[in-house]
Each structure stands twice: as C-alpha cells, then as structure tokens.
Length: 531
Image (cartoon, rainbow, N blue to C red; front, side, top):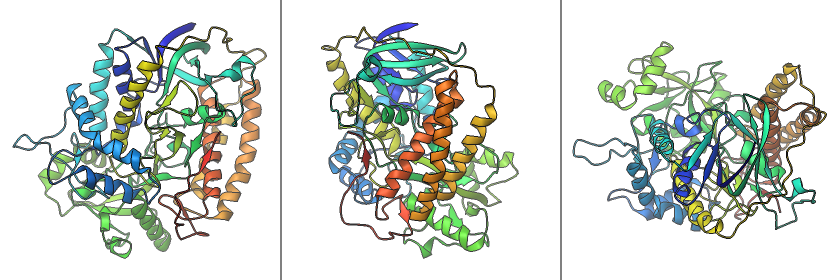
C-alpha cells in the first residue's frame, strides 16, 4: 500500500485526536495507532485536566505554580501561552462531548492536587482521561475526512536519508515526507506520504520495570525522531508518580491518583506513622518529585517494599462516590479503602523531556510536529505540575493545527520516496532474545537510573546498555520486523538518551537527583541531543 494524505497523525491519545479533529476540516487525515484507538495513556489518566475556571484562581497563580514545580527550567513564554489558552481549550473539549463533574449548583467541581495553590482540576470522577478519550473517539468516528489504521506500527519517519542523502545532526534542512508503517496482522510494510506529520505517540514509561504507563508506551516517537537526527532534550527528567498501587506482577501498575491526596488522604510509613513533615511543609501535597524522593528514602530506611496511603478518616460515601475506580480496584485485591490503608510505591509515570518543539509544536524537522508526552514544549521544566499534561496536549495540538493548515497550501508530496527494503531478512524464531533483553533493560534503568542517581550508577547503566544496543541492532538488521523487536530497539534508544542527559546535568534539579551533585546550579541550562 502506498497512501497520500494531507495530515498524517501517529498516536490516538488526546494530543493526536484533538489535532486530527481540527485539521480534518482542511484536508484528508490518516491516523495510525499500533494498538486500538483507546489504548493510550490518556485513557488511564485519572486525576484530571488543570485550567483556570473561577475566582479566586487566576492565570498568574497557575503560571506561578507551574514555574515553581518546574524548578526554574520552564520556558516562561510557553508557560504563559499554555495557561492563558487553557480555558478556551477546555470549552472545546466540552463542546466535543466531554463531561466533567459539577457541584449541586452547576459549577464545575474542581479538585486540588500537589503543587497547586487553588482548586483548578476538572475531573470526571477518577477516570477523567477515559471520559475525554470516549468523547474524542466518538467525534473521530463521525468525521468523513478521517481514516484510522489500528494495529499499525510506525517504523520510521521518511526524510532525505531514505532518498540516499546524508542526514546529520548538523543539518537544519531535514524534511519529513511521511512514514513507513508496519501493518501488524499481515506483517507488511506500507509507505504513507504526507504533507505534514504529527507525532503524538506518548511517553516511554516501559523503559522501567514498574510504570503506570500502558504497555504501548515505549518511546516510539522519541526514538524515531532521534534516529532521524531531530533534536531531543531534557530526557533526564522522568517523573515517578509517588503512589502506584503495590500489587507485584501487575502491568501496568494501577495509579492511585494524586487527587486522592488532594481529597485528604495521608501518606504513612510501614509503621503507620506520618512522615511527609520531615521533607516538606506542604506534607502529602508537595510536588511529585519531592514526595517520590521522600517515599524512596522511607523505603530505604525501613527496608519495606511499600508505604501506605491512609483514607480511613475520610467520609466513606464521598470517598466511594468520588473515587469509584480506585475503590473497586482495591476491593478486587482485598483492600477496602474505607477500612484499610492502601499500599503504594513510586512508579515511572511521565516523560517531561522529548522531541524539542517551538510554540507551534514544530520540531527541528520541517513538516513534522509533536504534541503530548513525546514532545518537550518547555512547559514542564524539571518537573511536571499535576494535571498540566492533558492541558499541554490540547493547547499545542491546537497551535500545530493553526500552523499546519497554512503549511499544506504550499507543500507538495515527495513522489520519489522508495518502498521499504526488506530483502534478505529472516524470521527471528528466538523470542527469548527479545524478552530477556527487555527484562535486562528495565532492570538496568530501575536499578541505576531511577529516583536517585549517581555518576557511578549512570556509568554502570551505560556500560550495560551498550551491550544490549549492539545485540539488538544486530538482530534488527537481519530479522523480519516485529513490533516487539522494534519496541525494544526504541526503548534502548530512549534509555540511552535518559542516561546521557542525566550524565550531562551536573546538578540536582527537579526530577533528576544526583548523590554527586545534590545542589542545584543557578543557570537554566537545557540538555539536548540534535542539530
């Protein structure tokens, strides 16, 4: 298959779908997803979406909270753009059919999470992302200009490299002409030519052994753009959510939303004692990096495998009504959150760095946009403020739409793009090579590149990763491609970027904490690999 579209979208979370709905009014759209449309990180987002809705909240307060959480590494211009456009983007989600909880008076029932100074988090009980995903998919299904290819894996974006030109990180004229994609059921590789391409592939939490991310979150978009010599930045800032349900063997780890702490739940150690007062005056509602490090330290001090989140003092009916998904999940494994404390552990949750983009979501590669968790807009800095991620997605997908509908007016398809060359490839019949390499990768990253790092740990991680890289590239270069092999290759790429950028940052800042550099530097230096 060789297809031509005005707008190619890779990914079906809030970033990809909100963008697709808007550009579809101006041309043909093809959406590619490696699983089914609703298997995204958006779907699993429990807490909500932050936006300024009512007095006494203001844009300035939300901006200030975001800058404080980002520990001085945010791009203030981008923060202001995102926050001041938040209200309009929320209205669009509502117009598309997303329903957020309201009080008895009809106003939106806003929540408050760690790092927020006001109640500003819109939510739909404790499954907000699921509700947003539902509304967007309903709109997508009804649009005549949108084609969705499920079970289709994006292998590589197409650039001058595929036309025989040398493409290096020093070029500033790299162009994207579309993508090569693998149709999973038939194992055939197709060429999709596009005037513009949007990367909305989500995060990379599965680089770690314990993550709240769905299994599809393997850093595919980030790895594709890195291989295409695009700029990637700030990958050392991996957010660990402080409270994932401790339930060994479950993947992904079930998230216990921060909104539960906003509702009044309290963290306690293995002995049932509160401990956050030792680390931050904001107690259980401190920003995530502080809470995650506090829990990590408590676990090391006690030797326990988890701490507790205590909801027993809260109103039973309000607790069950407000958090039905969490109540049902915990009950399914024998925990009644109205009577029992919830065992929790930190888990890899959000990639704050990624594909560097500007205020219109344009990457360093012409005709290529990125939005959502795979992108680095400058909003989050060194640490993401809770519930800013869904907001970031709709803001920058809108801005990409504004730019892309103008761009397609002057862009032509690149007709001389060759088909994918799979000659000489053989089927790999030893899946154990891939599964064991994945376990090794996740063990390396969890042991050496987790919440607390050091120069020695990072060096050890890089040395071991080098072996996995060579073995996987050798396998890739001679094998008929499968999703598992490509995902492993992408995750190794992403792990390399996390480690290298962690090594480059000679300080502790936000989500990156080093035993060798415990203090923050004054500068706003960013880490990037690219042009």
